[in-house]
Image 1 (cartoon, rainbow, N blue to C red):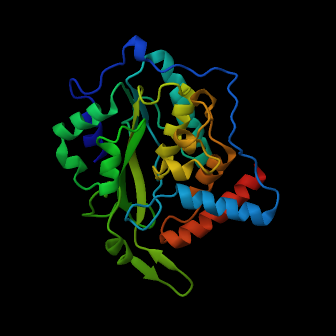
Image 2 (image 1 turned 180 degrees about the horizontal axis):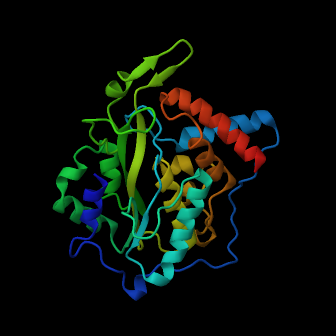
Amino acid sequence: MMKSMLGLLFLAGVVLPLPATAQPQAGEADGNDIVVTAVPTDPVRLRKAVAAFVGRVAQVANQGQLSRRLESFCPKVLGIEDIYQPMVLAKLRDAAKAAGIRELPAGCKSNLVVIFTTNGDVLMKALRSKRPGFFVNLEPVKTRELFGSGRAVRWWYENSPRGPNGQAVPGATDMNVGASATEMNSMQVYTSSLITTNIVVNLSGNVVVIDVAKAEGFPLDAIASYAAMVSFAQVTARDTALAEIPSVLGMFARPNPRKEALRDLTAWDRAYLHGLYRIEPNRPFDTQRRRLTAKMRDAIVVE
């Protein structure tokens, strides 16, 4: 449950404000991005480029469907001084705008948490030590990403099964990063014209952990944009694959200087979020991927 997840973050000694010397710094205004983010004008090239983007970004774990937020979001930023929080929140809101997701009013129960820490491995170890049961359903690859990986940014999701119209499913349990493919396939419904599923996958909450030491040299707005992108879509953490697409997500595997990292979501990132939140949620992944590619292509041409 997301409330259990958030409860972990406030345990004494687990999340502490960073010392002043460790605070992330806003980037210099004159950084020059060298990543080519222009949209191909040739329809064939554009179609291939969009298909490659979706193929490299989308991550479905074992649940067999794309996950997305079915409800409004409520952000919480921990571990940095108040002066830096508006920049992080602005990037989260920018991604939410692209997706068409509304923010809950002040005082809401947080379902999106971004944590800045001086040591991500230590923080994750402490979280698992306090509540090991929460992490038992993670896939092995996600477990390796979260614990001892030394990643600058790591994240995990709470996915909850819902009915085809977004209603709660009686007796259903949270999936963490995914239900089994067998379970999801058994929920498919065949009609005269298409295959639907009896459930949709709701990204009901997520936590993003940013290791300031590992992210040193990157502008704060770049890191915040990265965190925003992974907060509204279940995306892969394969850095080398992401480096080859025009997305803020490839920043950790690109050879250009860190201070020149992309500082905002690209037109491609925005189109991906736009498309993701406008396709039918109760469809198998293969169907969703085709429709997401088409929606993204239309959105990026308009933009």
